[in-house]
Length: 592
Image (cartoon, rainbow, N blue to C red; front, side, top):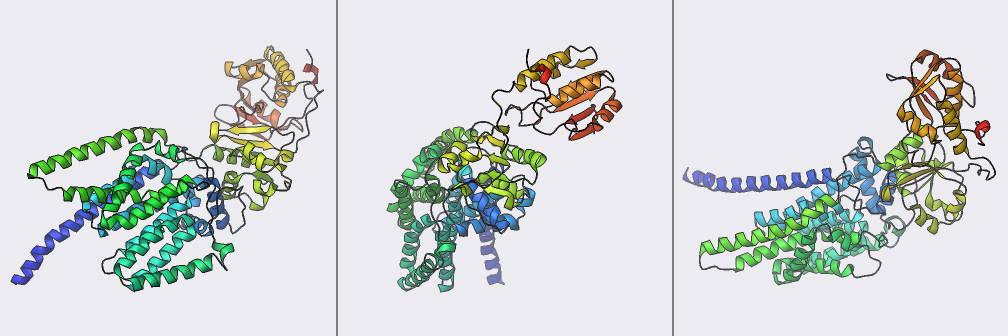
């Protein structure tokens, strides 16, 4: 009974310790997940290659081939992981856009990475609070929030590498743990070749324990890499993305404190025996930043979980080495150091969080362009860039009707529409055949502004006759005549586009004809979203008063004056015409 009582007494503090650790790690994971949900759809910083990775994931879900516009690198194994995770979690079905659907996978990967970092820190001998500080830096850093929301395969590679290191640092590790560790390392390298920088750390940990087992893991890893980069190279061999923006400077601007603390950790970590293997990998990643052509974003994605671990380990080692003469002196020194550290981090984070502008709207310009095209050109053959390909394919557009920009390497296949969310000028420079596809075509709808601008163009329209009278001038003069009619009443909002010549000629002609039958009240010429920035005339009208007669009048029209829809609403009768009125409907108003 005495022995049983003693075991119960000893187990109480141990159980409480474990429960506290569980509470701490769950709180940290909840923080990491919540912040990433908030910033999931943030538009900046933007990575051009992200659209291609999303498109490849969507293409694999549809079991179809896709060729990106170049510069995104190659990672078949990484794309399969992205597609499988988004499919299993039904992210494609729940999310507004394909981009947000695949970014949800990045959210899960970030939370899993934080959990693995906690386990690794504890197995390296870090205290509960030192491990918590390392995970907190990874979970809440603005740089980590901005980077880990992007669809970058290196995030997947970092989790595989952390999983391998967790297995290799297991206190009671056996050969049965070394084999999964070798598989994780192989998966990391197949996801991104940059993950090779973690092999020295893994080898160092194995050699410390058993050179024979290190040789076994090396044989397994070399065998897998030999197959992947040899006979199966066409299916598995990864390649790095092209270098470009965002650069290291762009990322560091979000969190300067991370750069300073990371530098301190990388310099000091080799002095701590337990941290040396990881310091080597961190220094190799820093060296990779100096290699021309290596993408900075990919390197930082792998470096993110390393430096918080090194920093926490260095701070713990320094704290333990100090032996103050008085206990109060030690506590005061630790408190001062903690306050200084928190102040440095807070100053950096004060800029980084607002700079990313979390977006409440998970759709964005590309989703608006997709919806507009579905309403005005459903099922048509569309020339698209990588981002538009993913969104239209996710929305159910036939993939056979989507012509990727890369298909214009020698000559563009015929298409009726074009949707470009990326730098159209850059794509034209890369694929000169695009110039022929866009010859004589102008923007039909424009969504968003700046770098997020999405342009929808109608291809194949006959070129305008330079000798023909201006349609805009004819519409403006006809609008003035319409406004002068005593049988037609316009609200002030309706007068502005009418006098500017921005109302469709079919509407002007039919309103004049309707006024001959009954008095007409025009409440508005509602804008079709995206068309005003492209210079398209308003092709909708809201009529109030005499609604029965107005609805019957427009329903009975014939081409070219037959509207696409006549809808009774709570505000009146909404009449909508298709795009592109035939020229010459207002010939009497063509000249002053």
